[in-house]
Length: 133
Image (tube, rainbow, N blue to C red; front, side):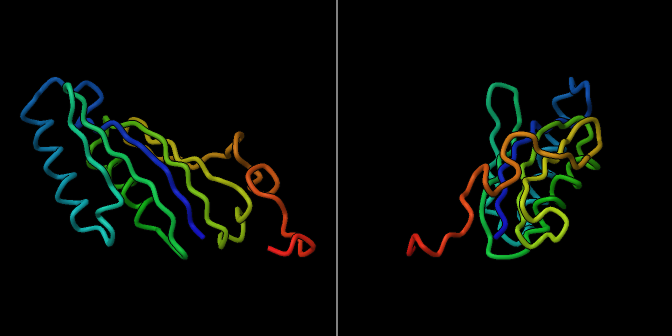
């Protein structure tokens, strides 16, 4: 199972004061998201001069497009910032933990999660056959 929850404030530059450039950036984001395998997982919002993206979901298997989306944002909208929480129980190295992806200043970095990891027993109990469920 893959579980992910993320948000990003979308900015064409770290000091975005040009409305036309921001609108061009926003259009590129919209176009990119429409090309994703599951574009309805992404919610875009423009409100009060702030452009943002939210994504959340669970898949039975691999969901690499989620991290790839955040990498794309880092490259094509380098003023953007946000957080992506990602858990993949098929990731051999990190199967029992969330990974935190930090988006900031054109860079995306993977970090340890101090809040919900280890997944078992922090979030979920270990399997116990005596429970009968």
